[in-house]
Image (cartoon, helix red, strand yellow):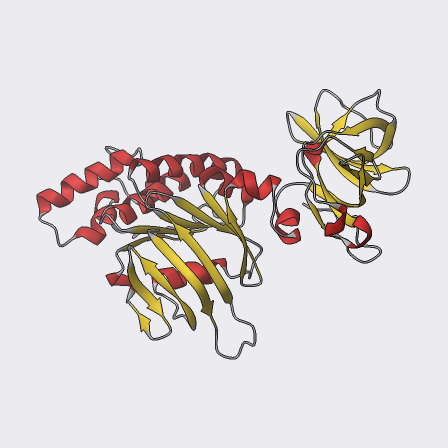
Amino acid sequence: MFLEVSQLDVRYAGRAQAAVQGVTLGLRAGEIGVLIGPSGCGKTTLLRAVAGLEPVSGGEIHLAKQRVSSPRQNLPPEERRIGMVFQDYALFPHLSVGRNVAFGIHQLPRAEQAARVAEVLELVGLEGSAARFPHELSGGQQQRVALARALAPRPRLMLLDEPFSNLDVDLRERLAHEVRGILKAAGATALFVTHDQFEAFAIGDVIGVMDQGQLQQWDDAYTLYHRPATRFVADFIGHGVFAPATLVQQDGQVQVRTPLGDLEGLSECPLPSSYPGGECDVLLRADDIVHDDDAPVKARIVRKSFRGSEFLYTLELAGGQVLMAHVPSHHDHAVGEWIGIRPQMDHVVTFPRLHEGHGATQTR
């Protein structure tokens, strides 16, 4: 691994709970990792510890096999060869774009500086902009200048702390794709912090979900969505609900009895012995529920959100169970209308049953 974080703890004086607790993760050279989670979960503190801006109270950080952080060692940020991009860009308004980009390579001969500035500006799609000033650029262009400045000294690792949070929603996801392309073209290894899972999906090779200072799961986006390791990850990523279910073994096959009926023919399913009495909660994603007028199970639309190509319907079964479903937007049904639905899934994700009243928790 190029970046190795092992059992890392970061504590602040006067706080009983560690800001980062027991975090272990790794990035290979050229990979882009993303940390996501709710506000205050510790993701920015972890990023700052990797940068050398926060001392660690436990565990270690290695960069290119070199130990850079431990409780008894903290290599200064300037010696770690790390490039950082912040949410406010931190460009110098009185300097041209070219001089902003050259800020970290001023020790090079002027000809080499000019060549490197031209190289990274071309990399970020801003060739010919060296003489312009930051106020003459759009927010997205300023962000690319900040990225070019961080890349100019050829850092071993790039750290990006919510770099798109000041941009409008439409631009953020597009720029995330562009930045991924830039980082890949530069062969950079990067760790990125965001609270937006769509940004994380757009830019990350591997994504870590954090909660209360702990890393819940470190995986690719597909696995986080379809095989969440914890209930928190299942709740934080995507749209869906937890529904009460009972696992039953019959004729050598496991059936999952749910308010939607029995789920059968699954490629992956835990055994009934995994839970007391086979009782558990099953995760039902919005894309696990299919609108089918001929289905025997009916649900009432209680809320609808237009998403362009689809609606996100919030549905309620006759028994009170709430579900969510992605439905193509040409199926424009009214709130209060009853529609047919059926489950369509090849595996189930289950968790221990929560106490009465919490089995139908709605995820985002």
